[in-house]
Length: 161
Image 1 (cartoon, rainbow, N blue to C red):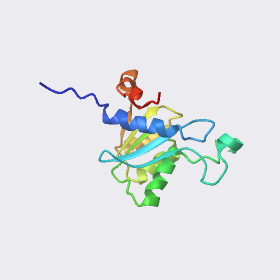
Image 2 (spheres, rainbow, N blue to C red):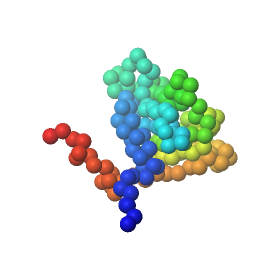
Image 3 (cartoon, helix red, strand yellow):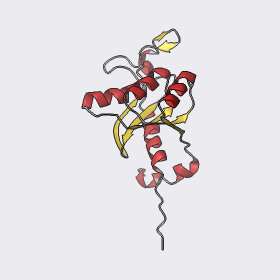
Image 4 (tube, one colour):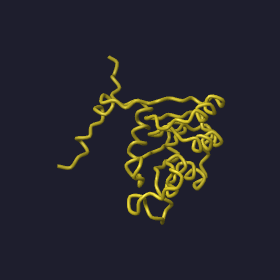
């Protein structure tokens, strides 16, 4: 008899980690989470928010200049910085992120040696970012999260009564 595997697939597992991280965001405009993975091991993670010690957008509002919040560091940037801070190479890693990366984050990820970008939602997708991803032969996948995936998680067994 073949045992049925009831675990969620790796792509959905890591995407759910990114979604969970996004709940820590301090941005009023968009909550984003990012996870860098190498050999099925999380090497860094990030969410969008302020520099440590500065005011959060959720407390003081966004610091808007030219249509962009200057207070916010992107989730991908926080994950990249975490690699640098703790001496972890992201060369050959995969990114799981809740929203398609902006052009600047895409350029940083490509320079860092990322081999795959997995995203949940489209968000102002830059045609030039897509061009660079294609130029560098980066595997780009949109990872769906379905109710079927979510129902596989035994949340009830973790909830307090």
